[in-house]
Length: 166
Image (cartoon, rainbow, N blue to C red; front, top):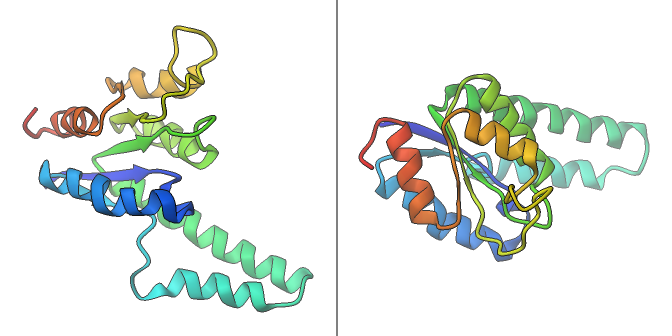
């Protein structure tokens, strides 16, 4: 089964997390694509590490603890992108989330197909020729991907790019 890393800011908010968990991830699975979920936290180890760091008094030790957690998460996400066959990138927001944009660029540099999903109706492109930031859109389209306005379209395009059924 092909695997897709899901680049998304949806895990930051309970309002979008439910849509991510209950709609986006199942849609990928239904299309025969195994999602590699950077928001997964089985057993709550990541949440516990952040909570423990937050309990430290402000200062160098607290900053160092957060930096160490951040480095582990960043490396784990990079490893997941390397292990993925492609990327589904959620492009919602006033501008594309900076972490999502970085993950798109990294995946594109590795030659992974990227399909963008923008459900947000606001236009945020640099001009009328771009739905989102022109550089983000370039890296998506350069590898044969697309920026889609519907989840079913994005999932179908990604599954097709990964060798599945259109």
